[in-house]
Structures are given as C-alpha cells and as structure tokens.
Image (tube, rainbow, N blue to C red):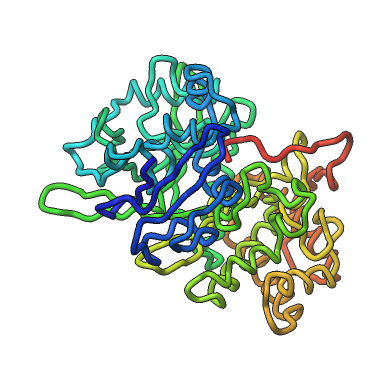
Length: 449
C-alpha cells in the first residue's frame, strides 16, 4: 500500500502487510522532515518493523459502524491493521491516506462549491435526530468524511451559514465537525462550548466552536459546530480552496496503540502515556519550551474544570513544513459531572490519580516530570490561582448554572490541595462525587469525545 500525505505529489512511503498480518513501513527514497509521518517514525532508509508500524497506523482506524461493516464484509480480524487499512485507508482521519500500491492518493484538496453538496434543513434535522437518539447517522445516510472517536458527530463544510458535505468520489476535505449531544447527556455539547470559550478567555489557544440548538419533532437538541484546526482554507476567485494539514495525536507520536491512551492501561513504564512521555514529545517540537508552557496551561485548565479525559488521543501535534507545534485545546468536557465513568486522571499528576489526592508536592512534581528544568511550584500555584479567577469571571458568560456550581465545587478541591484561597464567589452546593464514588468505573468518558 502507498502512504500519502496530502500536499505531496508522490507517496511518502510503502506499507506492507505480510501473510501473518505483520506490517513493515519503508519511507520513499530521499524522504525528509516534511515527509515525516510521526515523531515516532523519523525518516530513514531502513524499514520499520511491526511494533513501530502498529503504534502509528493502528491509530488511523476510526471507530463505529463503518469499521464493523468492513470487518464483517471482508471477514477480517480486528487486529488485522493492514487488511483494514487496505479497505479503509483512503478515508482515515487527517491528511494521511493509504491506498493500494499504484492507485493514487486517497485524498486531494477540495474546491467549494464544485466538490461539495449542500445539506438542506430537513436533512440536517434528520442527521441531528439520529445522532441524538442513536449516536449514528441515519440508516440511509453515508458518512462522506469519517472522523475519529465514538459516533455522535459528522464532518461538514460550513460557509455562509450553510452546511455542505463532500460529493461522492471527490476525496475533498471538510472544515468543521458537527457534534450532537446524545439523549443520555443532552447538555454535554453546551458544556463543551462553554469550557472552550472560557479557556480562550483565560488566554489558552483553543479549537473554535459555537453552540447550536435545533428543534426536531418537538424535541430540543443541543449541538456544537467546531472549526477544524487541521485545515487550510484560502480564497481563489469565487471559490474556496480547502486543504488538510498533517497532524498526529500523542498516541501516534509515542508509538502507542490506541488501547494505551490512558496511563492506567499499560503495565510497562517505558511504554505508557504519562507526564514524562509528554516531555519526550516536547523534545521533538520545534520550540520545546513553548510546547511545555502551553501543554502545562492546558493541563491546569483541565484540572480546574474536571476534564479527566485528556488522554493521548485528545492531544495532538501539528506538522507543517518540517515544524512541529502543539495543537489547540479541544474535546474539553466536565467528566467529573458524570457519575457513570471513572474520574481518574488520564495521566498521573505527580503521584496523584484523582483530584482529591493532589498535594503541593504533586503539583511540584508535575512540571518536573514534564521536563521543566527549574522548580515551578510557586509559578504553578500563581498560575492556578489566576486561572481559577479567570474561569470564575469568564464562565458565567457561557455556562449553565449547573456547570457553574460544579466548577466552583471542583475549584474548591484544588484550593484545598494547595492550602490556598482562590477568593472565588460563593455558589450553590453541587453534589460532587469524590474519586469514583460507589462502585467500579474502569472506563473512560463516553459522550461525544
């Protein structure tokens, strides 16, 4: 199979699946930094063996009904990454496509309006209803641009307040993701928009999004429309040209299969998602100090708003012209408000696995584990206090009363850990579950993450 990155006229390398389902990947002759697929796969003449290949390529397989149909239709094993990519690789998320050798790229830039068809109001409502009630597209619908993660969303193009999808066979990219709140958690997209806009007000670079509300068959359905940060949109005459920007998530950058996206999932200290592993990623960034500064800010914000689902597939790197930078903050949800899932950190903060276990020492160890060279506890305490005040000031402009009360309860937990006083306004009591409350909750966040 040829491996392509959109924007390059030739394959960047060759992926081979052997009879025993093992994989090898070899870069094309002369490949350099701009053709690099991943920090975990730097360009070199020697081929990469199966373990390294699976760490990157298995993360290109999206979840959902389409994966199940391919498994059933071609009688493939779930672990047959090469066989699945042979069938699905042209449509995998991002700028990378994988196609049978000699068949050409699976993706090309798009031109609006030529390569897209509009969605009318009736079709949008049909899609929203199905995603809300069943977390999948309507039975007769097609997914023109599958996106990673659990279902509950569809990739679209938004222009002049109209939504479009790529025409069949166009191989064109989308510019936005429409997420719809499931019936089991009808306010989750409202909360996500509120938290991202609050993060932006606190000076954190975020994925841009807006809240939407639709009334379908008398039912109020909340949704959000998120601008894709991995797209480049330029005007050319009367048309818009849309191209993909190469990105990879932290699992790929670390060579970790998707099953190891939480620190608790691995038994091997050398092969797990953790603060020290993020520090290794930072050393591959163009400016490591800026990467670490921005990632620490994202982490402290997630701590204060109770988003413990900042796992290795909810953080990304952007590759552009050989440079590597941290992607904006995205997929921020108040996991601590959900009693059905674990509230463990995705990666330990110092030694702490839950917010309730945090100490000043843990918050001192966190930046040290990430790779900061100088003691940071004083700076981290000041940053948390300033951010907590920023959240208390900005969030009322975006959040529901329930979310505001919950955020105050979460801030008090961090306040106690530091033995500090954030001087926050008093709010109504919120019945916050400590750690995981009753019962065992081993899983991660559901929702539309």
